[in-house]
Image (cartoon, rainbow, N blue to C red):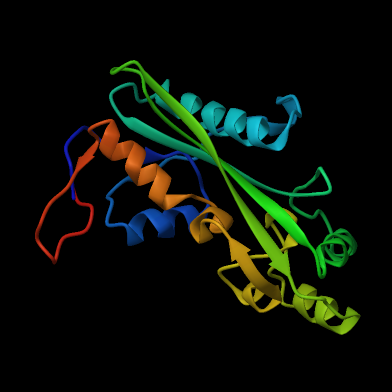
Length: 205
């Protein structure tokens, strides 16, 4: 595929989202959005992550009106309760114990904004994740790896956290932090990228 429009920007400092877009062959700038997430009213999880994704994309798009800006936000939900990023090891332990042996849902909202083209697109993707039953030793081991820090729900499916997961139903990349299939489909639909036949090409400028 070829990018056919001006610069693409990822409004996130997440190395996981950056890696997913790079694997798709896209060339883009990374400009993290300055958004006060605490100021966003907590609603249902699907609406909440979509609102945050749009706020992040808008914050950067206002500074770069000619560019196409991608914003995203991910959260983990179990029993209707949103599990954010654990602030401490004891909180991470509580989250993992709650997820143990049970299904939960990962919601990622994504938004694509271009002020020059007057485009504002936003959607949410939902994936079901089933954890294995975790022993206290397994939880302690995983916390000691340091991986739960700065991860919604206190785990990373693309890392050592994969050892905790029995199965998923839905988009894997959505659990990582960005539903790549849906984002690329949206970019194609908006004319930001187009298909190219060469086998050696991914998504390129």
